[in-house]
Length: 121
View 1: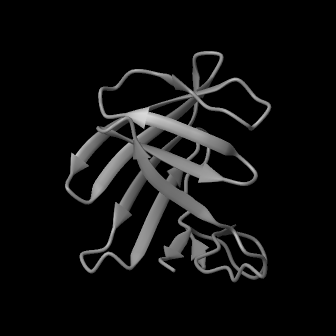
View 2: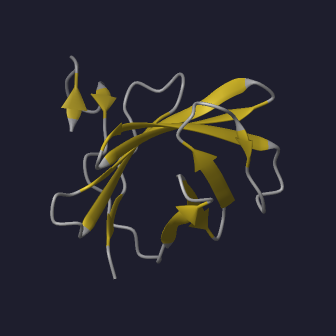
View 3: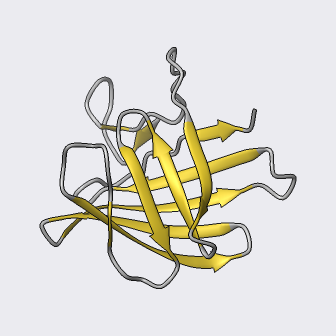
């Protein structure tokens, strides 16, 4: 989709839908009663509580810390940092029927977020 001005090939282009041909699994599990664990094969495990404090991630090989806050019953905000610098901010929402999870990922310096959708199995 074209954003802004331009004609022909010149302009700002944004992917609005991308089909991924590989399986990307995200597991979300309870963490210590009042938190959540977000587990992916490529990024490791992010264990967070909803207190805004930084918690170290495991399994990624990078020194990532994550903090979280609950926005409402179905939405949480997650911030990832490396060396004290925010590398992304995520808004993670579960649909009303509980079958779809939407993750809106904002990366500093990018004007458009990445928005992967997950279906519950």
